[in-house]
Length: 259
Image (cartoon, rainbow, N blue to C red; front, side):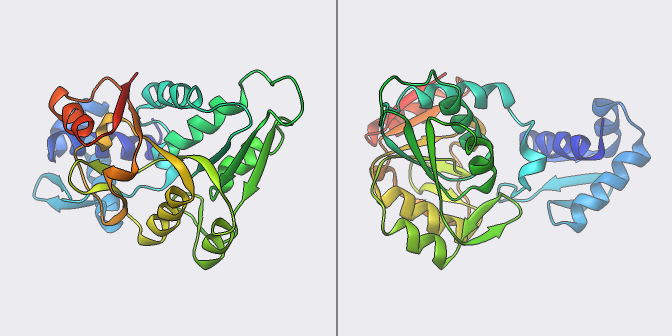
């Protein structure tokens, strides 16, 4: 297990339990206690955890991990979500996609769909995510429009006035948002205010908004607001969503699809 994989596993355990002891983490990951101590010290220096005597506790706010640390989290669920979201997109539609691991799976699912017959039936994807643009540029039936902006290393998203300048000139049929948190009261939120601003504009420019998020993001809130639930048409998530939470979203007018 690599260092990044251990860090990801430690953060998953902290997210689940709220606190972690060195010895139990060492046993769970099958590494030495000394290795776990070093890992926790490094995570604490990056302000991802708070060190305690004998272990660590989670911060109150959801983690804003760099994308390279997140790729293994709930991978199967995210692939299912990506495929389900792709089915909501009709040929010829203009799709807005922000950055993140789940929206990357949506992009991949769209890219591998059978190429439609006839001119003008390919999908157009407008994105501020440079990794998504890189993957899909070689697909002949996908037209990629990449916003300008300043690249944020944690998410590979372009943010700032240049991104907003481009989006203000475009009309989208559907925007698919990956979010850091989705709550019935606070709506869709992100850790970073710059990302939230661009994501909000992606939502504003679309006829309908789909949130693609695995169940670990639900019932939580992050720092910066993207949009309220009244702007979200559909939530596509995994079967880990609880019935009470699903009912709260449904009562707010959001169609919930759990795959």
